[in-house]
Length: 308
Image 1 (tube, one colour):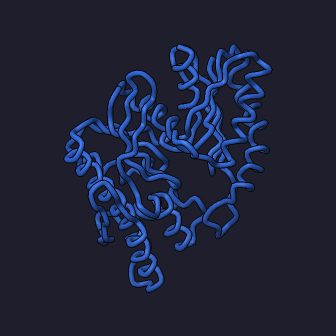
Image 2 (cartoon, rainbow, N blue to C red):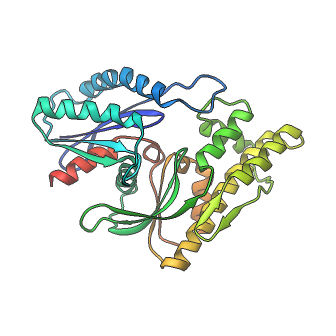
Image 3 (cartoon, rainbow, N blue to C red):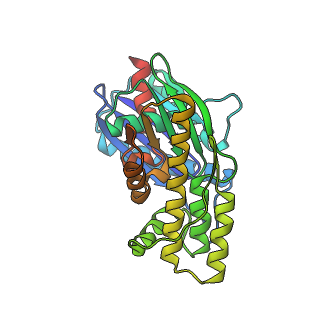
């Protein structure tokens, strides 16, 4: 068995897979954000992870009655870049190292982003070695070139120059009165729009995109109270989907056509997934909604990969 640990900005996650990559346990706990707030301080995130981890360990133990761990992997940084650091990841790293020392098994480190890519491939049931990946979440909106032929190699080609897609959704959602994170609430509201649509500006230039201008435009609509909230929500979804479509199209023109994998919490949105499926004439794969969000399955799969 192989244990994965991920302590991201808003989710505590543990997962266990076996030697065939079958998922034996997947336990997660969202961090609590006070009403009206648009995020958590890192110190508050660390404190909640410390409270959540023992509870999740007990839940995993209930799923897997007898452990036979061969390796542990943990997300120790946001990205696989020098200097990439957030205190929340130190929490999981400390637990992983302690477990590994007690059980006398290897402890491998990967980035949170690498975990998303591995979980996305696994859940989409694709076996690609070289591809593009769009990692779209509250903390990341990046276009990546990925190569898994030998080890995991990730090169950022482009992405957002300001707000991330998830931040765009959360800021609009909080302005509409929803709790943070606002993604599920905004998606539910947007479903009431039916086929009606308002056009929120799209700002894509080459391999870069921007959501600060679109967010300002939408906040003005909300304050003016001239547009139905459901139409505002659907406009945000369409703006993000069309921005991603143009980004992928530009990447194909600049760097050649490759399969593309979509991961990250924003990619759990059904409308955005459907829009991209219908409007991209490319070989696309989407992480299952449950595994598009923050999880430790990718870390567990990484432990299996390293052990092999």
